[in-house]
Each structure stands twice: as structure tokens, then as C-alpha cells.
Length: 138
Image 1 (cartoon, rainbow, N blue to C red):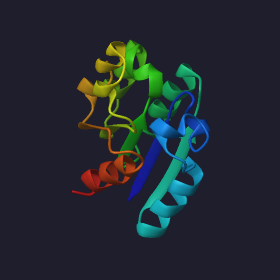
Image 2: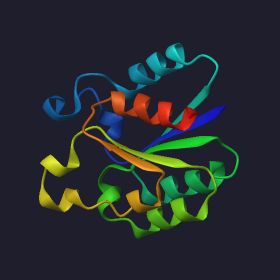
Image 3: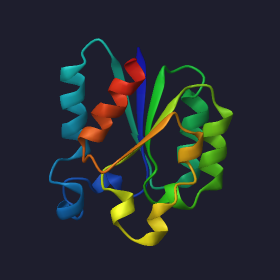
Image 4: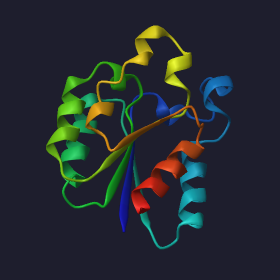
């Protein structure tokens, strides 16, 4: 089984960016933990601060992987193009947000991308990625 984790803008700074919201763990360390916990699953990771690169990655793997875990960051609330890319591919996508987007600024309460995903997890911290992975296994 092949799972792709895709993170959007500013998520390369996990572990140092606003630790009160996003925690102290880097995404690299968390991915290592996931790979250790799920050795039979190939887990790939991609991050970009550029909207078009996220769309290109969705197109590239959206017909060959078994699942995609997507945290589009701020693009969740603004990108019709990423929402369209999710709708255009066959691989199921689970949207993840580390913080509870509904407990934050009002503009974060709307997810343009979520309607095209299999499900949306918000507010579970980094373990949202593991929960998304578990949902793709069933």
C-alpha cells in the first residue's frame, strides 16, 4: 500500500512555528514515527509553499497511490484549483488540519477542498495524520 502525505504552505516549519497551536514536533520526526508504526505501508512525503506544485503532485500520484493525506494549509480556504485537482483524481484524499479550524479566525471555518475529500480531520494535532492513515486502511 502506498500513501502520500502532502503538506502546503508554512507546514515545513512544524516544530518551530507557533508551537502553542502546532506543537513542538517536526513533520520529519512525525513521519519517521508513522513509518515505524506502519512498516508494511510505503509512506511518501511532499511539502510545498507553492499552490501549483501541490496541484502537480496531486495530478502525479492521484491515479497510482492508494491514498493521499492532504494538509493544504491556508490554501484550504482559498484554492478552488486545489479543490478541482482533488475532484479530478481517483485516489481518495483525506484532509487534515492540526489545529481546530473552527476554533480559529472565521475565514478558516470554510474549507473549499474538504467537499472533494473522503473525510476531514481537524483539531487532533499531529495525530490527525495517523487517524487519516487509519481511515485509508479501512
